[in-house]
Length: 362
Ligand code: NAD
Image (cartoon, rainbow, N blue to C red):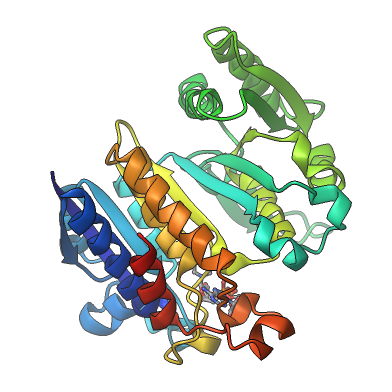
């Protein structure tokens, strides 16, 4: 089959990790008889340098005309104080909004081979860990009304941001979570602050209504403070966590840290239908850019998510995940996950060697 993929390498290590990911995708195409047609476009700092705007219209047009988008990462100190306030990270918000990407999926998994990298005690993550956080991405406090104004003389300046959700927004994100749970452990934990917030009470009630359509899935409700605690006390109790934009932002970063290897974690942002944008959880790592030492596995695993969720190629996605696992089983490590033993045994691999080896294992 033929597929159109918009590729945004981005900044910092973005181009390096994307090159390796396309190498692996090409191998999948060769092996399984698919054509992945890539159109490379600019966003972030690279786009500011070339066009003055962090998200050129051409990039949006190419993304909208594609089946899926693969993104490296954007940003870096070079663009931190641009005149006019243009920032690379604004490209991400623009892409999510313009492409209607309302659901962010972040798996937090501990690979058995890398269990030592987790900051949690071995008994807490024994037997591996595999959670998916489904975060609402286009509503809530990040997009609500906001303002800054002069208060009373005692108050000084006053600022506010409004957390607001509609039933429609809650229903569609809850459905993504329940559909995902049906393909996994059949458990959804909805996270809110319903003891305090009206928006959370509507969230809880609406998620419970959606749950009626999924009798096989067990639904739990946690307050966000408890969820934050349970993620480090007993993360294995979770399968799919569904939550609002701001709570999901915080909990998914917490969950990624318990895996201990940010260079391994993929993510997906989905819209209506099958369209999606796929990118690693980490940023553009300007501190290691251009040295051929970045770990490309998070981006390679994001490509596997693209095959599974947007292109409907489950077998091919499995092949990538198996190749990554075989790479680790063989004892190979990139510098960020390389302990002294692997280093001494000469098992350390550069970015490009990692791409070659994983492509070879497909
Ligand atoms: P970061 O994730 O880029 O880096 C944090 C640390 O992890 C660094 O020490 C880095 O070297 C290391 N690291 C990250 N990815 C790695 C990989 N694949 N292999 C090996 N090591 C890796 O986060 P940061 O330093 O806070 O941000 C750097 C820039 O990236 C900033 O401009 C930030 O705004 C941007 N950013 C972009 C995205 C995105 O594009 N989605 C996400 C987060 C941060």
